[in-house]
Length: 188
Image (cartoon, rainbow, N blue to C red; front, side):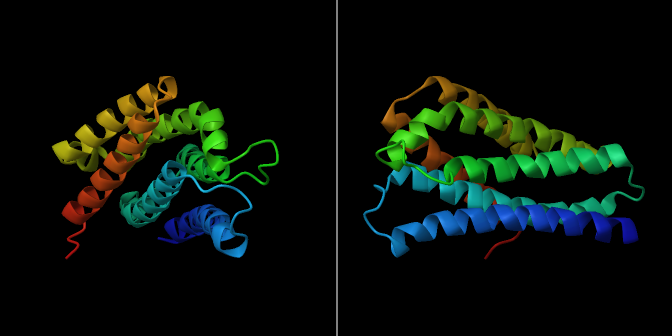
């Protein structure tokens, strides 16, 4: 159990930095309204990543099922968590002086965002497998539907620039995530 406590502390730090980055980036619209033009689709993706991080953090309690840790598992999981931080950093860069709005910025960086998001879904399968064969094989069919559909849709999103598509995709991802959380964590 000591190994798990040690491992979860670094995970908490990295995930906490990601959440801080999202919150700090979102608060700018209250602190400096009108500085940069708000874009609804960008904000939906911020909401999705926030929800995903909170979900991931809760889900990782299952890492306690790993009885013996090795460095390769540890470095893999840190790398996986860093992908979440990268999503946060892409959504809210340090400055937007080269862009007119978050809309301009989002579409200029959508390939990076959706590429990293697709990698997150692949890493999620490895993460699930690390918890043991029994855990991996006992995962509900909805888990596999989520991973495969979201991976494919993320790859499609790299190629598509249509604003209606991106709005619908963000709404779909958020709705699916909320339903997924509600189903597996007995949210009432």
